[in-house]
Length: 385
Image (cartoon, rainbow, N blue to C red; front, side):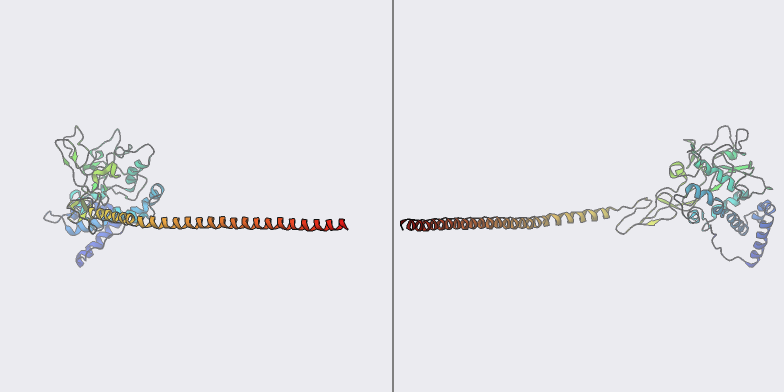
């Protein structure tokens, strides 16, 4: 995933930024310990320049997951994914809008200690691949969430921190970090599944705001989970699941709206349509109509055109069918006439042949009789002499 190009900074800020980057690359633990001080000004307000810079740094650590997960993706999803980088960018390239990350940074001050490492992401999604496990709501016990240890961060929509002085290797795919301190509600733009204590960014096309308690149903809207019983200080948190539309449809941007970021939802304007999971509104086709907040185009005009075209074709076929049939009948009639003429000529030829044969027979009989008389006379004359 590639990071977007930022605006030019003031020279002094650039120098401080370079020093800050070097410090984070060389001494990440120390810098993360100082995040809270760096993010606030003397008046207590957030230091926008520091927040922006640290947001970019955190994103740069999160954005290289492609190489880490590429073997797993090809192994389990290679039948439908040919370009892992392209598909990953379509879902997790947040470079155009990192507001969800900067908001979380201002709120928690320790995002790097709360974001899931590669091992935790792999642990979560491995439940989809395990044979016989089709429900993403229930994860296997792990070092943070098990029968003997189940902190608030194990509850849906909540996450914990590894601690201010702890370093997290986000690219570690083998070992889950110990993450059980300072549990809080999951930041908007992230989802925190039940059974792990970290935050995973919601993909593009999702809408992951903070949940609100529905006192009628007891659910944390717009999600389906509830506040755990026996914990009066526990509140609704963020999103708790992301999977396919059937399993995790709550987090997808609803039909009739589009989500330019995972924390912002905008209603579709007139002349556009927005299907589930849209990141932008799509213009309607020519001759189609689209009301505001609609998920599909009204293509009635295309239906009328199609019906009219089919009707015209049927009329042409009907009108031409008489001519076609008449032409066929004429051809059949001519064929019959030729057959009759041929039969008549054959019969006449037979009659002529029969007549000629009879004449030849009569002549042969007359000639035979004449010869017989001639021989008889000669024999009679010879006898008299």
